[in-house]
Image 1 (tube, rainbow, N blue to C red):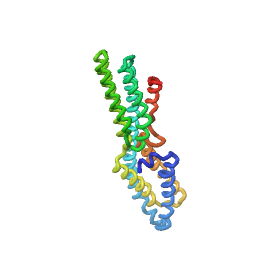
Image 2 (cartoon, helix red, strand yellow):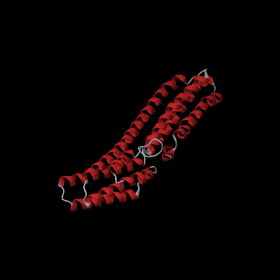
Image 3 (cartoon, rainbow, N blue to C red):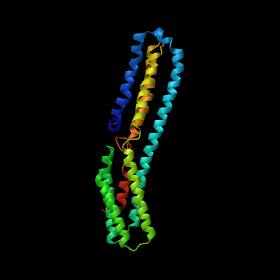
Image 4 (cartoon, one colour):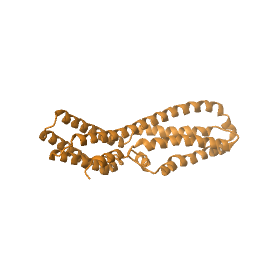
Length: 259
C-alpha cells in the first residue's frame, strides 16, 4: 500500500489521503446529530473536550515523530547519492593516466555509473536493486585491483582508491535499503488508526451551529491527513514524484565519463 501511494501523482495521493477522508469526516457530525440528538451530544462537551485534548496531544507527538524520522531518512538517502558521486569523481582523478589498466578502470566506472542511473533507479522505485549494476560494481573492483597490480603508483593512491570504492559500495547499499521504505508496518497501523480515531472523536461534541462544527471537523481532518500525505511522500525516497534523483551521478558522468 505504501509503495502504491508513494508512486501516485501528488494530486491523486491528495485526493485519496486528504480530500476523500475529509469529505467522509464532514458527514460524521451530521449523521451523529441526526442519530443521537443535540441535547445528548452537548452533555458530552465538557468531559469530551478534556479527553480530546489528551488524544490530540498523543497523536500529535506520534505524527511529529514519524515526520522527523522520514525526513531524516530522506536526507540520508540524498547524502548517500552525493557521497557516491563524490567517491566516483575521486576515483576518476586517481585512476588518471594513459596506461591500459587505468583506461579500463575508468571505463568500468563509466559503465557502473550508467547502469546505476539507467537500471538501479527504476529498480529502486520498486524497492529492489539492479543485478546489472551489481555486476558492474564487481567489475569495477576487479579492474581497480588489476590497476594496482600492474602499474607503478604510490601505495597511498591505491589505498585511497579502495577507500573510495568502499564508499561507493556503502552508499549504494544505503540507498537500496532506504528504497524499500522507512516507516514500519506497525507504525503505519498506529498512524492510520490514530488519524481515524482522532477525527472521529470530534463527532461526539455538540454545538448549536452545525455548519461551524462541520467546518471545524473538516479543518482538523485536513491537518491530520496532510501530515499522513507528507509521511507517505517521503516514505520511499526513490519512488514517486517526491524522490531523490540521480543528478549527482549524472553530473560526474558528464564531467569525467568517456564521450
